[in-house]
Image 1 (tube, rainbow, N blue to C red):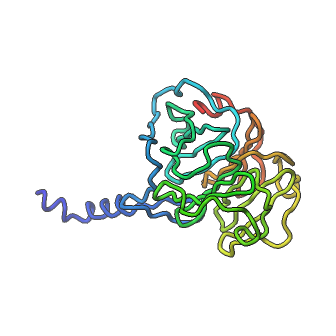
Image 2 (cartoon, rainbow, N blue to C red; image 1 turned 180 degrees about the vertical axis):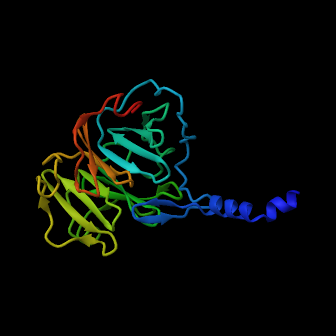
Image 3 (cartoon, one colour; image 1 turned 90 degrees about the vertical axis):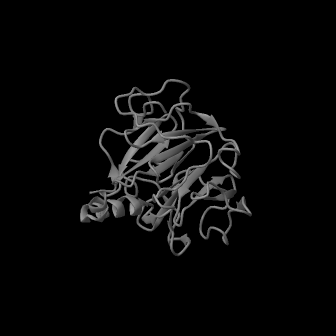
Length: 259
């Protein structure tokens, strides 16, 4: 009977589905081991399911300087010298956060005042602080050797060399970088800024978005992206290319429980 079960067509399909399930993020398919999920840095622990539970209590992160979609169901928010983990489904902050940005959790990363973060392709992410950046390996959970490096026309052609305020991967081969009242569209495959940039943030280029001072952003890869400024956020529809009605809203326990 057991042999018939293992040899059955239904069981084989189920096994293949489980072992090969991919994670789609940043317009790429990330394969990181048998389960297809990137491994978070050491010390993160397991994500809470949250079903039927209330949001964890404790200190809150009400302002966000940088955001990173880890592409495994978690988004990490950074502010000053601390970070928080947000569980996308069902949607609240993990318990025991915020935590300090320490090398045991984030080997090789800046330990404070990260300006921007963005997930890239090939299991990499980039963190920016001032005129420097770090390439981070999402699969191994640590910074790549030789970093930080300076932002210049050799490392980031067409990007501001003095740094960026926010960054977001749009999931279509393009990434957007924001600084003050301007933004740059960056071609990931060509590894350079698109011609004609930077441009100004206005209602023609980013409908409903703040025209300056974007602090952080991340792509949910479900047709929505989120932008943060001070204690507010905007949900942006990536398909219609405009801000969703009713935004901006305040970051509080009703909109981002447990954050």
